[in-house]
Amino acid sequence: MPTIRPFRALRYDPEVVGDLSLVMSPPYDVITPAQLPRLLARHPKNIVRLDLPTAEPGDDPDERYRRAARTLAAWRADGTFHHEARPSLYVYEQTYRVPGSAVERTQRGFFGRLRLEPFGPGSGVLPHERTLSAPKEDRYRLIRATGANISPVIGLHDDPTGRLADLLEAVAGRTPAIEVVDDDGTRHRLWVVPEDEPAPDGSGGTIVAELVALAGAGPITIADGHHRYETALRYRDEQRRSRPGEIDPAFDYILMLFLEAHQPLTVLPTHRVVRSLGEEGLARLGEQLGELFDVWAADRADLERRFGQAGLVAGGGGRFGFWTRAGGALLEARRAAFEPFLPAGGEALRRLDVTLLQVALERLAGVDPAATAAGRVAYTKSVAEALDWVEAGQDGADAAFLLEPTPVADIAAVAREGDVMPQKSTYFYPKALSGLLINPHEW
Image (cartoon, rainbow, N blue to C red; front, side):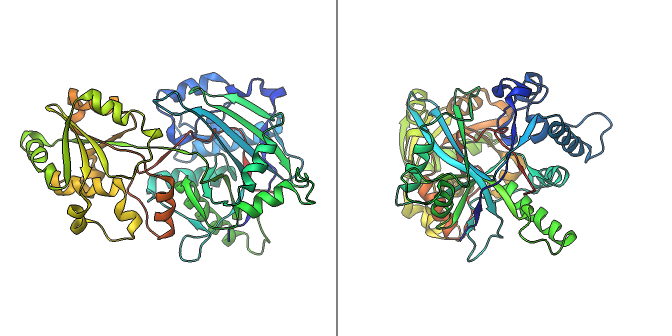
C-alpha cells in the first residue's frame, strides 16, 4: 500500500514578499512563451525562477539549474521562505469555473509526501501515461541541483466511506493560511494541518493520521506529473548509491497533491488537427469515415455547441466532431468495426476515445504513431482554435477531430490493467498552483 507522510514545507512569508498572488505561477509545463516574461516581471521572487529557470547568454547546459539552486538557497537565507515548524499536511481547495460554461465547481485535496515506488505488479503507485525523455531530463537536472520538489505530482485515490471529504470540509471551514486568485479566476486556498491536530469529532485520533490512512488504503493513480515522478525515482536511486545506509531519507519521497477520485473533477479533452493530407488524402478521408463511424452532417455552430463545453460532458461514448474546409460532421464510432484494428492491451485501453481516434487516423488517413511523432498531428484544447487552424490551413492543417473528455474512472481502469494511454489523452483542470509550498529533501 502507498506510504504517505506529513512534512515540513517551505512556504513564502507574506511579510517579506507581500501579495502572495504575485509570486505564484502555473506549473512549469503549461506556461506559454508569452506568459513567461509576464511572470518574471510580476515579482522578483516569483516561483517561476525556481520551477522554470531560463537560460542566459553564455550559460552551459546546467547553469540555469544551478542558478535556481542558488536562488532557492538565497531566498531561504533572507527569509523569503520559512520552514514549517512541525510536520504537517496541507489541505488545498480550488474553486473554478468549468471552461466554456457558467458552471462553478470546488475540489479539495491535500498535499503530502508519497514514498516513491517503481511501477509494476504489486506497486501502490500506478501510471496511465507514456513519458518523453526530454522533459524528464529537464526535471532531473532541476531536482539534482535544488534537492527539492518545486511543484507537485497529482495523485488520485478512492475513499468509498466519504470520511476523507468530511475531514477536508471541516478544515476548509476555518481561515486559510493562503488565499489567492489566479489569472484564470480560480480561487486557491491552503490550510496547514499539523500532525498532532485532533480530529474534529473527538474520536481521539488526529486529522493527519486519518487522512493518511484513508488516502493510502489503496493504490494511487498518477493523474498528472508522470515526468516528475519518474525523474524522482531516478534521483532517489542515484542518491541511494551515493549515500548508502541512510534510514528513511527524505529523497525517498515526492511531493503529491492527493485528490479523491469520486468528487467532481474536470478533465478536458485535447483536440487533434491533422496536417498535410493534401486534396486526395482529404477526399479519401471524408469518403472512408463511414467505414468506422456513423456520420451526420454538422456546421461549425453545431460543433462548437456540442464540444465547446466538453468539461461538463461525461465522455467515453465514442463521439467525435470532424471539420474540414468543405464542412463538418458528427461521428459516432461503430465499435464492432474498430475491433479488428484495436491495439493490444486491456479492455479499458481498447475502448478509450483517444484509442479509437488513433486507430481511425492510421486506417483512414495513413497517420501512424511515427507520423504523429513527426508532427503530422497538432493539438489544442480550444474548439475554436482547432476549427480556425483548418479554415486558415495554418501550418498545413487540413482536418480537425474534436473529442470529449476521458472519464476519470477510465483513467484509473487503464492504470489498474497496467496499460498507458496515448499522448495528450487527459488534461486535469485546474492545475495546482506552483509556489504554494515546496518539498525540501530534508526532515
